Length: 454
Image (tube, rainbow, N blue to C red):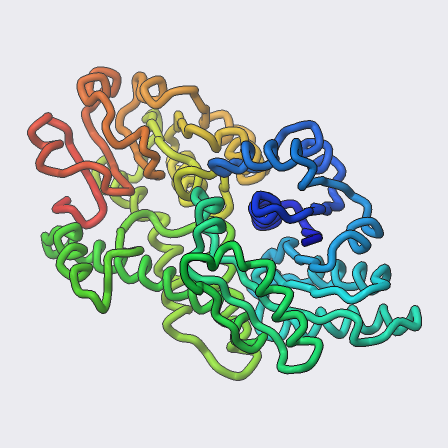
């Protein structure tokens, strides 16, 4: 099938590459010429395991191409995926300007029937806006208003495992209208996703608004579980309980399960913070406050400071002259995504208290440097107190303590003899509970986890 992907960012690239892998002829559009130049020269502007190899394979086979040509992109695909960014607006709502602009471009150039797929994460009612924008542009050119049919097909990709998630999905959600055009679009989507349903049916068909809400509901539920466990972990610290034992005890209940029950320094990234905020904003537009989600957001923001609070409790509020090693900058492992990353808050707070920070991340250091340049834009002297090195052990040299923020596999089993030799004091503040407190005590390491008998 001929498919166009509008937006060659995280979702667009994964979607385009994976659909090409299934034999489709995919045209990826982006209006950023630098990004297209990178892709056409064999590079990939984001880090995602397996994605670069898949893009190379399908470009070589002639099934995947990248361009800035809007007219050519619309002419190419019978199915047009809109996978552009929906950044948070100042009031917390999703900014739909890029989605609507993509829709208008389709309406300005379409001359044959098209299925328009909202792949971007968008609030309920977006499909109506997309459809209205397309129809307006079609009518200006004397084209039939029903030439294009809009479908909602939200993505459920975990950063760091996105290719695997797309190729082996646990569910595919497709929302269509119960109209002749909507039924034709449903049939097209069924054919497109047929290779992913060979072993068993994974597709859930529903109306468009239900599909739009499903995406936000899923991310809001997962975010709620994270904030709930962080609340319990903080209580465990106070009462002397072990949050890991609690996690196992409640996770064994089949009604609860183990997923997303790990305590830590709070969630970040491109999805949870933005989607929870946007869902709350949508509810307020209908006169309803989602009080649980408001609490989820509040807990998450406070949790980003939890390691700083533990450091303060151990060393005092004045950290002048102290140096901290920091392992992990990205908001989660297997990605270079620094959006809403807890590390950014932790670094700024340590510097604010007079400390310096030496950081290492296996992948995210270039992106982290860009983000920290923005974070410290008004504090050039503070930025000088932050440095990055090429290995975890190099970060430890002469530091007063180690702070772990991201649970990269490379950090799970370090040479603790080296760790103790390089640190001036054998102290670890573990924001991801990578190590067992008892084992650390036996080694002579002063250990502070999240809800682990601190």
